[in-house]
Length: 477
Image 1 (tube, rainbow, N blue to C red):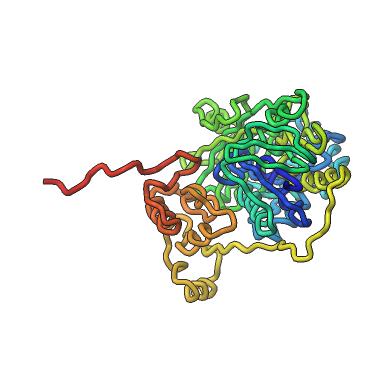
Image 2: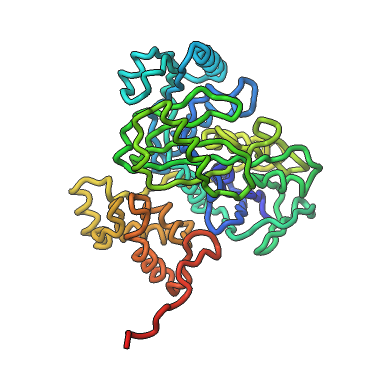
């Protein structure tokens, strides 16, 4: 029997695994996908929020500022791309200037440091491409941008390095009481654990209802985005928000940690797994964004994507015990990415109060290094090529990703099983051609490294085969 089973390995589940793996515990991480962090964690704005937006007294407010601080500490330890660039909330009218004052007061109550109200002149000194119609802005210097998927992966990998067991392709079918804990039936077998953490994202209400009466409902809400090429990456230097409304924080414009520009999202109710993009939604995003930054060149768009938020009908995070030793971490909408480590830190405390024995490991591994060849100096590049010639073979020309980095990804503690799994770890296919050039070579390397046929290589999720067979079996006659 495991001490703790975590259902779901998105940002919240991976953070729980990371914090729990500091202790001498037997931990199971149960994930229905064939890789980690493949839900909301990989499709969001990639923002670590400062914490002025949540209403004081809510759980969102409780965990946001602490999570902001912890995120930066964890990313530094685990070599995850994270940059503190600050954010601006723009006001375009006197009425919206009052909203800025309200956000400022919320931020003070929530413990957000060093905020300022800027006038229009200050805005355009700092951000010359912001609209002339912006009359004021709330500046929060502690806001940051991050690689959200790598952040979740880094915590999950660290947990695995420290002994946690990751069970992929293991969708939960049912949960029942067992002697001393819970029995979880999955598509790949059963798991018994003394304590269970429900971190199943948009499915947390369904998991909750397997052990307790219905007490909340997840109302999935989709947000669609543009990702623009790096030639647009310096259009702004801060995260640019508009004043929030009942649908959330609105459409933002921000640089990414990789040097691109991200624009979005909208907010529409959706199905739990509906990540389609729609023309009307993208038109709304584009029209809204140019109100903030009129000069964005959307012809430089390289990809559109959709993320689905786990909005609870309570309007806040749902954190508490659904049944004996069964802890819900549900409704983790924005600022969930920011709050995740603080939620996990508190979840460990809550389990301890319920009797979970925590003995710190003496040999806990709390570091991780990710070689990014394109960021090295010429001298360092020559050094790593001398050690391993595979780093001298560029496979992805757009992002200058080498065969050595791809092979590293395929040998990582949580091994990718698909083209997109390698993409998320190594960065292949992230550039302007979106894998059009490097995709076949990456497929070949995956097949060779895993000793499988080309036909067995996946694009992403289970069943997404790229090749199905030969179209010709000989030369033309």
